[in-house]
Image (cartoon, rainbow, N blue to C red):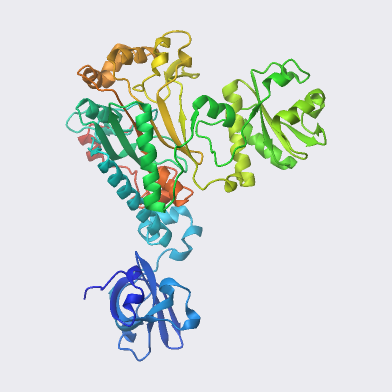
Length: 576
Ligand code: ASP
């Protein structure tokens, strides 16, 4: 028998009709000889009633939770007193029931899914995915893919797939390596991104490219990271930075409109990397609330408080009234993020008490005026080298957000651009300059001359990040298309010509065969979906994710392999 429709498609129009439905039994209750079932498919759930004298009764009596069943019956309104709106206003009076398959008792109750340990959910992911929440998340994901595809196709972007077994791409993470059986002792790297290939596609003349690309990065995992993840990867030729940003804005607006029916306001505000760090202590500031820092370096310079008197940077953040316990907790956050401590003051009338108050008597009026702290409010300070101070205070700002739910007063989604990233960054560990985005990012045209000078740290890159609610949801850049500039970039990051040739010789060759100006971006697609669905982790929007130790608990990967298989690929596992 064929089903007549999905459950969620039933409504007024099917009233009093005979319907045939197929799905899973969510629940079964026996009430005074009657059997009540809840039958579920991916589109919805409906109540089914089986009367004791029904020919369907004996078969219905066999049904248990998660059995697969086919039910034929009359679709009709429920008694007035039991209506709750939507499908719950109707029920099916069964005339025929067929058990299509039995099920073992599930290891957890599906409708209590959220409270079940995540490891159990991941081990039985196929059951976890039956839950409404997970079904909705994956449907949202599919809708977002459709929205992206329809927009980019209409804008002339071409979908091209790039290889999975390839060479290392420098995106700042470790590679996953795959041994080659046909070339013993040699390895492929899984792509950290399709960066070089998409640039080659521009050199090849495809003009506009996109791909929902699986990428692989061997990093420590967090709630918003997975070892294999999906990027929406894009590249455009004959463009400048503004052209890329403009298309991206319209794309994101389209996706939100189609998937969530939410209108994102355009244009997205732009903030320089310096301002983002200086005011919010983050290159991906959560701007659903303000709480920007005030710079009070000058106010403390040469003053009574020795720790601040000669500090290169003193920043202050205004907080509501805090208990000692809360201040201690925030100080712990500051220290974890590189600060020596967290100095504080509580406003009391026209002066301050607590913390460092005995050192600030003289400048109290200016501190009140410059920070706008209200009576009872708290000032939290970080001092020291600029980047260290703002980074630590940035972490405190986010801890305050969580403590006082500060983001709740803002828009549900706040999107902005962070632009003008530095081209180069000094790496303290190796005591050398390195790239900030990746080595193919073009410097700002006005700053190219700074390569190799002592001011090269001030160079701005034509790089941009798309930021939503404190997460980087995309990042990209205009690329270097001039081989000479590319050579200068490698030189600046201490890459000898031989090293560069060995790693990306094919790409450097290609650059010399008529490379168009080009630029692009990639979105962290999982991360965007996490935010769109309001989930707390990207694992909630990925069908089969790894846990935070990088393991697939269902398939049991990674796992040891047979010696014979290792021998075939010429690999020997070293004992500890
Ligand atoms: N390949 C870059 C990344 O994965 C994105 C880009 O520059 O387009 O972050």
